Image 1 (cartoon, rainbow, N blue to C red):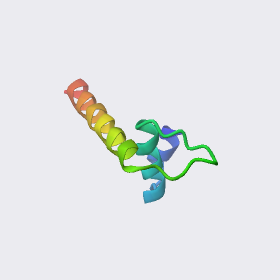
Image 2: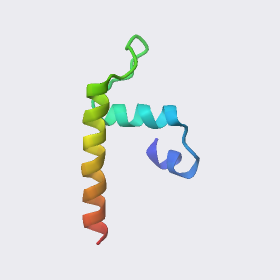
Image 3: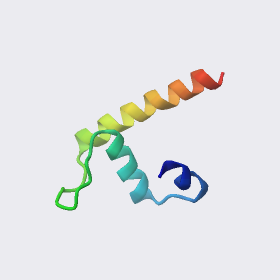
Length: 58
């Protein structure tokens, strides 16, 4: 899913869902929208992923 998304412009809603999934949001049809705790966890994990990528790429 992520590789296809990198070639096309992503909407804000899809990026919010992506960060929420990184933070542990399951995204089932009966689930409410992601909350602040899931978004915080997702953004913290995304920050660590970016730092790891930068360390690896030199």
